[in-house]
Amino acid sequence: MYPGGFFPQETGADYLMPSLLKPLEEHRKELSIFTNLDHPDVGGGHGCSNTFLNGREIKDIRDPQQMLSLDQLLAEELGQETRFPSLQLGSGGFSWSRAGIQRPTDGDPTRVFAKLFLNEASKTKTSTRQFLDEDASILDVVLEDARRLEKRLSRNDQGKLGEYLNSIREVELKLQRRKDWLDVDKPKVKNTVLTGGDNDELEVDLAYPYNTAVFYDLMVLALQTNSTRVITYGHPGGNRLFPFDGISLGYHSLTHHGKRPDLVKQLAIIEGFYAQQFAGFLSKLKSTKDAEGRPLLDTTTVLFGSGMGNASSHSSRNLPIIAAGGGMKHGKHHRFERKGRDGRPLSDLFVTLLQQLGVEREEFSTSQSNLNDLLT
Image 1 (cartoon, helix red, strand yellow):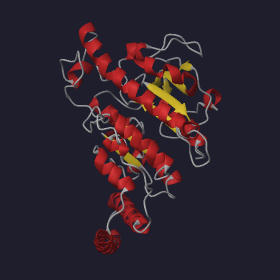
Image 2 (cartoon, rainbow, N blue to C red):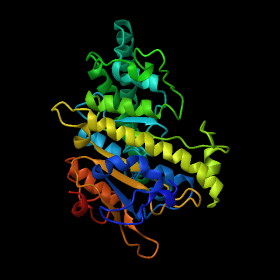
Image 3 (tube, rainbow, N blue to C red):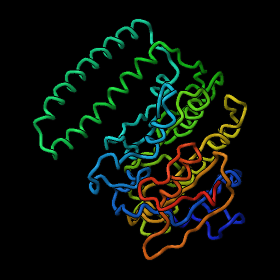
Image 4 (cartoon, rainbow, N blue to C red):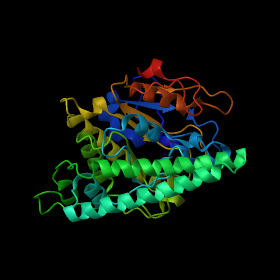
């Protein structure tokens, strides 16, 4: 997000909402904005976009488990009772497994709807069960071979094999989970999120960027039906030409604006659209009730942000971060002092989010403390 339009000038509760975030004005009491949160161990370049939820670059770590991202830790802790431990939607790259592997994402809203809410036919279930059994048998053979090999390896190579076995165990767990849920009916919901309902004049655009609203609706439904408790959604980058009035260059070209007013103006149209869609998502969470009749926003922690602070300079400093909902104390803009080049670790916020969600962790990634005094 363009820094000049994202960060408020004033701190505290009486800040003036910045130009890019004007659509969020109605939700200011339910959200917190932060200035000078960094991932201190992350350098510049395009790669820092992928470090948003773990604060690590894969080239700098020895143990792949250090790449585990916030969402996947939450999936391990909170996602074991739902059909999907987590969902990765839209564009990806910032969700990492414990084995140090980027989790794939799904950018097709029709396929996501089917995955969440459409039951498979009985013949399909039979075939799926057979495939799952075959895959499990193959994994058994692979694991047996790996155990025999392990005895002949050096300590260094045993470590590498251990990383491989962690990946195999993740696959094993996924296969077992899918098998366990195969005969459990999925929640029944209307597909108006894809079709627009009975209004013949309403045509739902399922192509990006207009499908952003569709994905937000799908996320609300997934949370409401307890299909999952952990979701990530990413806006794709690249140099696509956005179909908005006033846009003449591709998105990536606009992010390298060099502070040229004409390019910043065009970029603001796109980022203003993002803020507008995010505001709509918060509104839907606020108006949708959970199983106990509470607004979903009160019981859902929402994090908006990026692993890149300034796309024009590829900086990973001063990341654009908003936290909302989750029963936390909100309504303020918090600015942290910089010590030399460094601000406050973003992972301090992550520790607070984990604890607020019932995951008792005192540290995560590069955290030095937490932000409990500000939010809880």
